[in-house]
Image 1 (cartoon, rainbow, N blue to C red):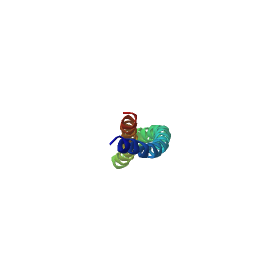
Image 2 (cartoon, rainbow, N blue to C red):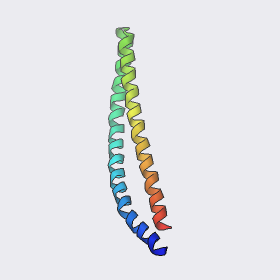
Image 3 (spheres, rainbow, N blue to C red):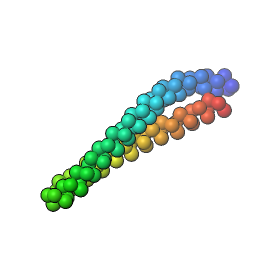
Image 4 (tube, helix red, strand yellow):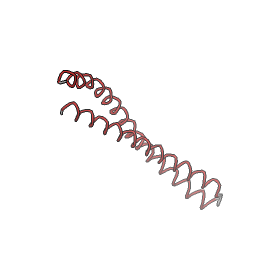
Length: 98
Protein backbone atom coordinates (compact mmCIF):
# COMPACT_ATOMS: atom_id res chain seq x y z
CA UNK A 1 0.00 0.00 0.00
CA UNK A 2 2.86 2.34 0.84
CA UNK A 3 4.42 1.75 -2.59
CA UNK A 4 1.15 2.61 -4.35
CA UNK A 5 0.81 5.88 -2.42
CA UNK A 6 4.41 6.77 -3.18
CA UNK A 7 3.91 5.97 -6.87
CA UNK A 8 0.76 8.12 -6.94
CA UNK A 9 2.60 11.02 -5.36
CA UNK A 10 5.46 10.71 -7.84
CA UNK A 11 3.01 10.61 -10.74
CA UNK A 12 1.32 13.79 -9.48
CA UNK A 13 4.55 15.81 -9.64
CA UNK A 14 4.40 16.34 -13.43
CA UNK A 15 0.71 17.24 -13.15
CA UNK A 16 1.57 19.86 -10.54
CA UNK A 17 4.40 21.19 -12.72
CA UNK A 18 2.09 21.48 -15.75
CA UNK A 19 -0.54 23.24 -13.63
CA UNK A 20 2.14 25.59 -12.33
CA UNK A 21 3.19 26.59 -15.85
CA UNK A 22 -0.44 27.00 -16.98
CA UNK A 23 -1.22 28.99 -13.83
CA UNK A 24 1.75 31.27 -14.44
CA UNK A 25 0.58 31.93 -18.01
CA UNK A 26 -2.98 32.60 -16.81
CA UNK A 27 -1.74 34.97 -14.08
CA UNK A 28 0.32 36.96 -16.59
CA UNK A 29 -2.58 37.09 -19.03
CA UNK A 30 -5.06 38.21 -16.36
CA UNK A 31 -2.73 40.91 -15.06
CA UNK A 32 -2.05 42.21 -18.58
CA UNK A 33 -5.76 42.18 -19.37
CA UNK A 34 -6.51 44.03 -16.13
CA UNK A 35 -4.24 46.88 -17.21
CA UNK A 36 -5.78 46.97 -20.70
CA UNK A 37 -9.29 46.78 -19.22
CA UNK A 38 -8.48 49.72 -16.99
CA UNK A 39 -7.41 51.83 -19.94
CA UNK A 40 -10.35 50.75 -22.11
CA UNK A 41 -12.77 51.14 -19.21
CA UNK A 42 -11.60 54.71 -18.72
CA UNK A 43 -11.99 55.45 -22.44
CA UNK A 44 -15.47 53.86 -22.52
CA UNK A 45 -16.50 55.88 -19.47
CA UNK A 46 -15.40 59.09 -21.16
CA UNK A 47 -17.23 58.08 -24.33
CA UNK A 48 -20.40 57.29 -22.37
CA UNK A 49 -20.34 60.66 -20.64
CA UNK A 50 -19.52 62.55 -23.85
CA UNK A 51 -22.19 60.74 -25.88
CA UNK A 52 -24.85 61.27 -23.25
CA UNK A 53 -23.96 64.95 -22.83
CA UNK A 54 -23.39 65.96 -26.46
CA UNK A 55 -25.67 63.74 -28.53
CA UNK A 56 -28.27 62.45 -26.08
CA UNK A 57 -28.19 59.19 -28.07
CA UNK A 58 -29.13 56.62 -25.48
CA UNK A 59 -28.74 53.68 -27.86
CA UNK A 60 -25.05 54.42 -28.25
CA UNK A 61 -24.73 54.98 -24.50
CA UNK A 62 -26.33 51.59 -23.86
CA UNK A 63 -24.01 49.97 -26.43
CA UNK A 64 -20.92 51.47 -24.78
CA UNK A 65 -22.21 50.38 -21.37
CA UNK A 66 -22.65 46.81 -22.65
CA UNK A 67 -19.10 46.85 -24.03
CA UNK A 68 -17.82 48.08 -20.67
CA UNK A 69 -19.75 45.33 -18.88
CA UNK A 70 -18.30 42.71 -21.22
CA UNK A 71 -14.80 43.90 -20.26
CA UNK A 72 -15.60 43.26 -16.60
CA UNK A 73 -17.11 39.84 -17.32
CA UNK A 74 -14.02 38.72 -19.24
CA UNK A 75 -11.80 39.85 -16.36
CA UNK A 76 -14.06 38.05 -13.88
CA UNK A 77 -13.82 34.82 -15.88
CA UNK A 78 -10.03 35.09 -15.98
CA UNK A 79 -9.81 35.63 -12.22
CA UNK A 80 -12.09 32.63 -11.62
CA UNK A 81 -9.89 30.41 -13.81
CA UNK A 82 -6.78 31.70 -12.02
CA UNK A 83 -8.31 30.97 -8.60
CA UNK A 84 -9.42 27.47 -9.59
CA UNK A 85 -5.94 26.66 -10.88
CA UNK A 86 -4.36 27.96 -7.65
CA UNK A 87 -6.71 25.91 -5.49
CA UNK A 88 -6.10 22.78 -7.57
CA UNK A 89 -2.34 23.25 -7.33
CA UNK A 90 -2.57 23.70 -3.56
CA UNK A 91 -4.68 20.54 -3.16
CA UNK A 92 -2.21 18.52 -5.24
CA UNK A 93 0.83 19.79 -3.32
CA UNK A 94 -0.94 19.10 -0.01
CA UNK A 95 -1.61 15.53 -1.13
CA UNK A 96 1.99 15.08 -2.29
CA UNK A 97 3.42 16.41 0.96
CA UNK A 98 1.07 14.41 3.19
